[in-house]
Image (tube, rainbow, N blue to C red; front, side, top):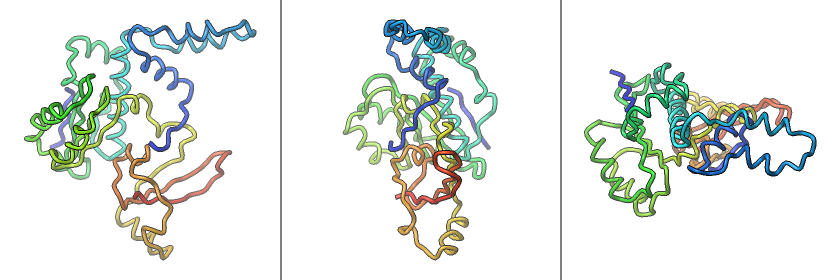
Length: 263
């Protein structure tokens, strides 16, 4: 039964709306207003309307922390949906004011955690956990494992708000018997797959991959490659050997299709 519990290589340039939202979210508490910085640099070049326009898009309705958490959680939900997991539409449609009202009532990181199952295989369960803002040490990793070891997970996604210590990072493979993905919260402030310049990526099934290799009479190693650490590969949670169909359709790249094999 499906369950949902509310609880690097390629880095595209952000469009204006997402860029300003992420700028506000990235600013530390107490930092100067980004719009003010723009105005300070304005040498009366005759276009003050631009600064006013940008200023109007910057969020001032609440704390920077809540904005960052909202953006990261929404992107994580979209990421799971794109990976084929069941994600309720009402969660995806939740607005920033609605999130702030829900979050401010009881601001505990545990409430941000959520789990769901693969739409095609309910036995495949994933959980997303937000780590505390302090540097992540081995003790934190062990504590997280203690909290999820009885949930029969197939995958875990950790969203970091600070750096993770090298020993803690190494201990993940030693402690968890399943795949664990880690993302810095700043990587999830914008959904990179929504950028207008980002080509369309489609993950091939095993059958589609076999048909492709047979059609072109090639093996995996002869296909163009994509690193497992690539931003799109990490977004989709792709492992080695997976083949991705990449469709380009823009004035810059033209209209064509290519394939990439994760390695």
